[in-house]
Image (cartoon, rainbow, N blue to C red):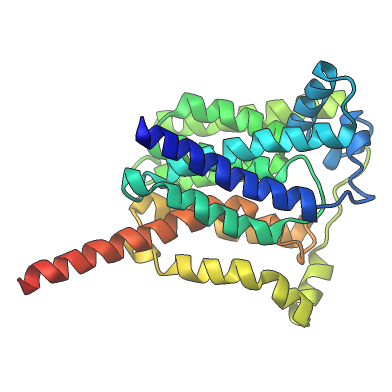
Amino acid sequence: MRHRILRMLFLLATSWLYFHVLKQDGYEAPWMPLQEIMRYSVPPPFGHRLLFAFLANGFQWVFPGFGYLKCFLLSQLVAILLAFEAIRRWGALFIRQDLAFMAQLLLVVILIPTIGYFNFYDIGIVFFFTASLLCLYKGRFAAYLILLALGTLNHEGSLLLIPVFIAMNAHDNLASRAFWGKVMAQLAVWVGVRSILCWWLPMEVVPALHLGDNVRELLHPTAWLLMRYLPSGLWVGVAAFGIRYAPILLKRSLILLPLLIITALDFGIIHEVRLFDALAPLVVALILCLNSGACLQREASISSGI
C-alpha cells in the first residue's frame, strides 16, 4: 500500500508540474487554432492529428459550459497522466522497481524546455512511443498494434515505430514469414487509419518540405538556435554514456534518432526542439541504464576489493 501511494504521488507531482508549465508558458499560435481543430475545419497535417481533439470535444459534450481552451487543457492533462505513468513502467525495465520514479523526474525535466505553442499531439506522441516501446520490449504485439492505430490518429509520425520494430526484431528473423507478417500488419494498420482520415478530411495540400531552409539554418547556426537545443542536447549527452550498459533491444531501438533527424529536416522547422519529443523514452532509458550500470560496476569493484 505504501509503495502504491508513493507511486501515485510521484505520478501526480510530476504530471502536475508539466501541466502547470504548459498552462503558464504555452500559447495558442495563429497557425494552430484550437477551436477550429476541434471543429475539424483545419487542413492537414494538423487537421489529421485528432485523437485528443476527439477527447476535448468529449469534455465539451459532458460540460457544455466549458470553453474550448479549458477542454483542450483537460485533454492534455489526460495525455500527460498517461505519458508519465507509461514512462514509469518503461523505466522499471532498466532500473530497480522501487527507483522507477526516476523516469518520471527525468521526463519532466527533459520535456519542459520543449514546451511552446499549444497543440493536441506532442505529449500524446511521448505516451504512444513510450507505451509502444514497452509493448515491443515485452513482446505484446496485439497491444502494440492497438497503440499504433491510436497513435496514428494522434500523429502520422507513428510510422517510425515500424522500422524500430524491424530493427529490434530482424536479427535472425529475416527469413521468417511470421516476422514479415507482423511488419505487413503494422503497415496495414497505419495505412488503414491514414486512409480513413484522408477520406473523412480530404488532404487538399501536399505537406510542405523545409529541407533547404533547415540545412541553411544548420550551416549558419545562430546563438538563439544553439540555446534552443542546449537543454535537450545536454540530456542526450548524458544518455550517450548509458549506451554501453544498455540491453541489445534498447540499442537497436536507437535507430529512431536518425529517423527523427530525417523527418525533422524534411518536414519540420528545425528550431522546434519538440520535433524530437518521441526520443524522450530512449533518453530516459539510457540514463537509467547509466545509473544501474555504474552502480553494478561500483559494487563489483567493492566486492573484488574485499
